[in-house]
Length: 102
Image 1 (cartoon, rainbow, N blue to C red):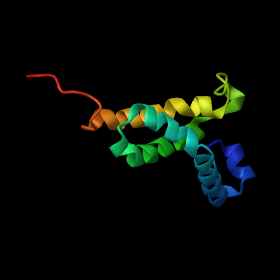
Image 2 (spheres, rainbow, N blue to C red; image 1 turned 135 degrees about the vertical axis):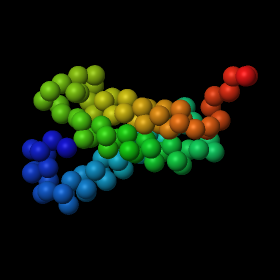
Image 3 (tube, helix red, strand yellow; image 1 turned 45 degrees about the vertical axis):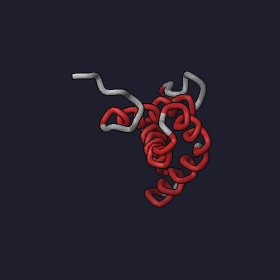
């Protein structure tokens, strides 16, 4: 996380609280992404990975360097949410792809 933000929120304890708030604030957006790309039986797991994507985005986000050029934190974070979910889908059989016949 941006060191300036960490110092403003009171160190590690404040950082964890901020992370929890950001993840909670974007829970509905993560759920909407999950429901578009993941079969319903895997929604709960995928939402956890979506939350991880939000945390990855929060770690990398810095409005000063232009990481919000495309319209703010959620537009930046959405790419990371999708990336985490897609990696998970690609790593195992989740019912989204059909195997090619051998």
